[in-house]
Amino acid sequence: MPKYILKQAGTKNYIIFKKLPKELAEKYEGKYYNSGNWRDSGDAYKQIDEIIAPFDVNAVFYPKALEAIKNNYEKFGFEKKDLPGINKMYNKWKNKKEEYKYKNEDGKIAYAIALYGGNDRHCEKKMS
Image (cartoon, rainbow, N blue to C red; front, side, top):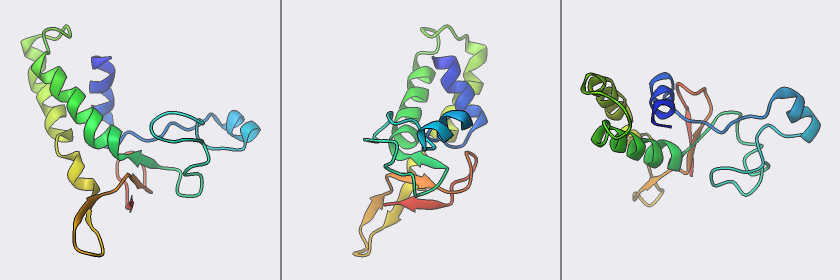
């Protein structure tokens, strides 16, 4: 699992909802799997956008997983020579939460539950 997380963290800027393969999407009339993450159904965000990057995965789980890999790299089977690459991925993701930050109408700081629009390299809008 740590190798998978490092690979995803290195090739993407956001982890987005997984889409159904085209043939299944047509059969089930939906774009996304019905479960996973914090959705209660596949219809929850059907009208928003094809690209949805949830806060919890991108701003909490990935940074914490990368921190755990960094702090315990030997336990996960990595060597000291792997540490610069691991640190690079951790540094890339550790402040991801800031990208979800916005100000409410009352001026208070809040965090969007998801970013959407664009692609897995750049999301354009915040879902509050």
